[in-house]
Every structure is written in C-alpha cells, then in structure tokens.
Length: 169
Image (cartoon, rainbow, N blue to C red; front, top):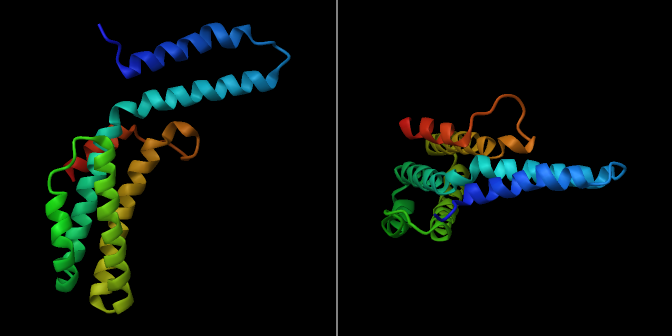
C-alpha cells in the first residue's frame, strides 16, 4: 500500500508531537514555540490539502462566470475574450496548468473591469456589482482556506464545506 499525502503528513505530525517536542530542552521556549508552529502548519496542511484541486476548480469556474458577465456589458471586450474562454473551456487536469488558466482569466477580468469602471454609467455600476459579488465569493473561499492559520476571526467553515455550498449557488 502506498501511503497518501495526508497519511504521510499525519505521520510526520505525530512524530514531532510525540517524540520531538517532548525531547526538547524544557528551558528552550523558542524551540518549543517553533515546534508548535510546525505542528500548527502541518494541521493546516492536513485541513486543506485534499481540497487544493477543487479550490482551483472553483476559482476557474467562478472567474470564467465573472468574465462572461462582464463580456455581456461590452461587445468589443467580448470579442477580445472569446479565444481565452474557448481555450479555458475545459479546466486543466494538471494543478499548475489550472492555476495558469485562472490567472489568465483573472487578468482579463481585471482589465475588463477597469475599462468598464472608467466609462462610468450603468455598465460601470453593473461591472462593480459583478466584481464585488465575485470578490465576496473569493474572500469566503480564502478565509476558509486559511481558517487554521489564526488570521480569520470567528467561526469559519472548512474549505470543503464552502466549496460545496458555492457549487450549489
């Protein structure tokens, strides 16, 4: 049997927690603090690792949806975007390639938003609403992703729960 990544990380975490941490000099608070930070980091990795590809897939889907909505406001911009939307229609199965697809689409979203916002008027207001809603969804994903780092305040759902809820929207 080949151990999963989560099993490997869990084994390392257990070794540090059960063997390394107790063996540290009790007077060396810095070493204990550092070991505790390593354990916290491993706990975070265990919390999110299985969701890395689904997270990027959600980013891919949401960013393409945002770009499509912006395209409906500006036909000239839509012409510019069609090739990239066709190219990214099927999400890459390779995580690094998928991330690049997301970055490429996000760059177009940013450019389209800047152009629409600069034009003022009802299309600018619509563009602001579209991008604000996308930013709220992305913030929810990001907070869930880093919930175990101590940065988000209050109760934050597990990233898997957030991804499932956003798929239903």
